[in-house]
Amino acid sequence: MKLLMIYCESFAYKPQIKTLENFPDFTESVKLENVLVAFTQMEAEDEENQKYVETKLVKNLKWAAKKNETKHIVLHSFAHLSESKATPEITKNLFDIVEKRLQNADYNCEQTPFGYFLDIRVDAPGRSSARIFKNF
Image (tube, rainbow, N blue to C red):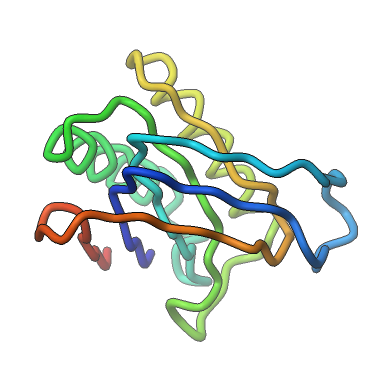
C-alpha cells in the first residue's frame, strides 16, 4: 500500500475521463475545505493481506487527520504511486470498508469518483504535517 496524505485548505475536483467502465458515471464538480486527501494505491500484494492493509490505512488516516485538526477525509485512488496494482474491484471494496469505518468513528469521509481521471486543485499549506507519505 502506498499512501500520500495531503491536508488541503481547499481541494476541488471535476471528473474528466472515465477509465473504468464498470463503475458509476459522475459529472459534477466538487469543492471541499479543511480536508485530508488520501492519494492511495493498493498494490497487488495487498490483496492477500486486506485486513492488515485496511487497519493500517484507517490508523494512518486518523493520525494524519488529527495532526491537521480535521475530521474530514477524502479517499482518492491514485494508481501512480507504484507499478504494482491491485484489481480495481478489490481497491474499491477496500475504500468502501474504510469509508464506513471512518464514518462510524465520527469522521466525515467520502471518495472521489472511482475510475476517473480528474481535474484537481489542491491548496495545501507549507508545513510538514500537511504532506505525509506512508508505505506499508
